[in-house]
Length: 217
Ligand SMILES: Nc1ncnc2c1ncn2[C@@H]1O[C@H](COP(=O)(O)OP(=O)(O)OP(=O)(O)O)[C@@H](O)[C@H]1O
Ligand SMILES: [Mg+2]
Image (cartoon, rainbow, N blue to C red):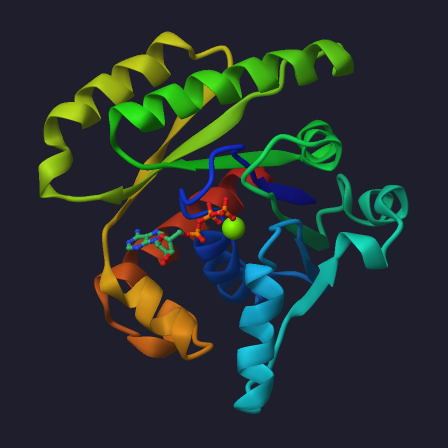
């Protein structure tokens, strides 16, 4: 199967969530890999931090090192294997190809007017990619970086997503603003390894459960 963390908007949490998701779900698959399309190579760099600390690493690959079509055919629709794609925060041919090939798309969004504008732009991309595929491509929106100041905008965002339900489905899981994400990444640790009983880990665990269920529907 192929799960894409995709959004052309930068800084919404795609890499942070993709990495934590990948490490947490790995035991469920015979073969799991993370394709890093982030221009900063956040996942590759994370693995380098882990290697320095002699921590076990998941398979992490760069697009320049692989044949994209071959990689897709290895993982697509195969329930024993999982390819996680961390998309770049920009529009490009490979990011669009990933949108078309993914079995499941997750789009993290923060809570602000800028994020609604970002989603409007992403919807346009989804629409064009759907036309290229000849089938509607729907993404699962994940509310991320939610805090107590988000209340009013949260309502607007939820309404926007509901209103555009042909392209967007809102996930039940919500990820709140938690310092554990930044602090753990800096040490080459997942939030689970950093703070096993922390709130970030509890939410990631819930997300893994929700996505796993969607993949096995
Ligand atoms: N729930 C959260 N709580 C606190 N910080 C967060 C949360 N989610 C993401 N961040 C922080 O936001 C920043 C941006 O996250 P990240 O790099 O994962 O975004 P991205 O979508 O992958 O960006 P890009 O499109 O540039 O690749 C990071 O510093 C990360 O630690
Ligand atoms: Mg990223």
